[in-house]
Amino acid sequence: MGKKPKVKKIPTPFLQNQTGDMVGRKTLVLDLDETLIKAYFEPRTDADFVVDLKGGEVAYVFKRPHVDTFLMEMAKHFEIVVFTAGTEGYARPVIDALDTSKVIKHRLYRQHVTGTYEDYHKDLTKLGRKLSNMILIDNKRFNLTPQPRNGIKSKTWIETMTDDNQLLRFIPTLERACRSSTVYKEVEQWNQLERLRKYMEMWKRS
Image (tube, rainbow, N blue to C red; front, side):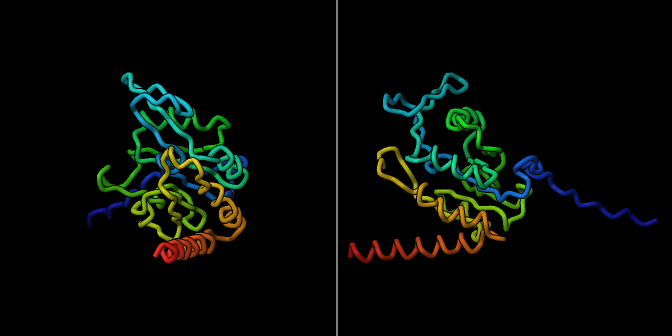
């Protein structure tokens, strides 16, 4: 008798099946650091909140302007996932403190990125959702390269950028995307307009 053919093992998706009022929703995947918050590990008296971490370390966290409004508005339309390259020991308590309304449905951490921490990306095909129903917002462009049609780059945010309105600007595009059959058209339109806006800014400075 010949050898039995090897059965290819299908990897277990990172996310469980949607349940309840999440069934059928599109999935909004959000980076954490410098997209939603900025954290420091030295004392800061002006932080929005402080989180005690394992090992006695403390995170002093600043919230990006309008992050609470953004999360609440997006929770009306999307299944929200935070996908960070940070360690679970750091990110879990920070997200707990940020998400006081419990609208973030799933969290993914450093163990879920593809590659090493020095050379990694966030592969949406591993989440267990249809690609045409997912949007990833991240401040690092290389995280968007595996599925560029799904990716929107956010400006990198630090706490001194107090007049930042990036999260509010996302809302109309994302609301349209949740009503469309796929996310691709709205993502491409956003990216095209951002390229044009940057070109115009460069032209004005020249």
